Image (cartoon, rainbow, N blue to C red; front, side):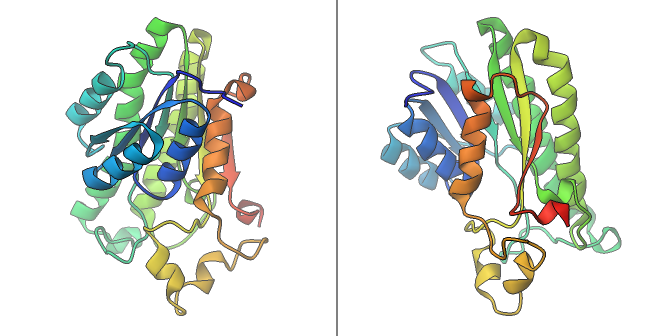
Length: 252
């Protein structure tokens, strides 16, 4: 099945984890995929693997988002799918402190919100005019279970991902009549490189899925398959949906 034959697809955060899994699935179904990531070398590796193109980007910078969209539409003038997947979250690298609001430094708050919420907003801002001009398109935003369920210890992250959910709803209303569908995924704990060290640590690993009824973490492909469905014509009447992919964690 080639649901994305000759369609142009941009995946941010496409070099690893859920993004890389989505890139592979889109390409397997005929998509012309742009792998966008802050790790340019890894993005290029994934792009070569799937026959796509790579673009190094910091999604917190609007100018780079604008350049990404211009790069994606070169030669065709089209952008059929945008998967706003790039984010920063719980990680053993400690790039940004994940903490309660009283313990989150200003620079960490600003960095988390810039990447996780503003990056999504910038992507939509520059993709939507292209989609309007061509008669439609699909946007899938990647939020988090923390956007819809109260979880302690990462308030800036929760705030940013909650913003993604709210923005998704607004854009679905604003642009649905232009045949642009905007939907959102809320993953639970997923075994991506970003959190692998935490999963491997006996002190933290089991706690990351203790509230998951399925009693395990998810795999990147399990999220990617939902993103690909929402971006496809199989979901042609799905707009403004907020879809948990969390093994049932959100219903507890």
